[in-house]
Amino acid sequence: MFGRLKDSGDSNPQLHITKAGDQEMRRLLVLAANYILGRYGPDCDLRRFGLRIAGDGGDKKAKKRARVAVARKLGVLLHHLWKTGAVYDPFFLAKKRGDPVPA
Image 1: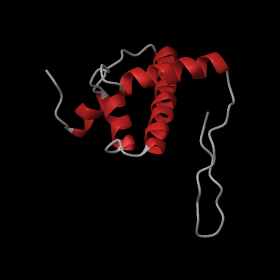
Image 2: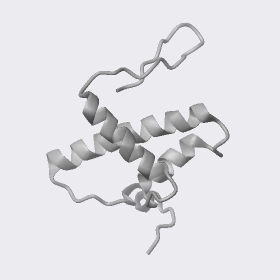
Image 3: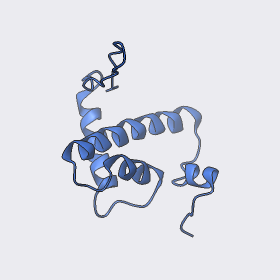
């Protein structure tokens, strides 16, 4: 599920996302990303990250790219939490950067 790059001279086009890994897990991660980026998704670092990628919402490709990026980041985050036993903090990066965080 990682994006590849084809480094050729001055251009670095991003290639398609691979379909490696468990199909059901990819499907669930994308469904979760849809919810996070959707109307009722909670405000958190993942949502802010996805909305930054999606931009103003006029570009369908940007929305799809944001959905896949959030799904991948969610998978990495879940794996990290599972391996380390750490507690999930929805505003970890925002607090680290000093961004405003809801009370």
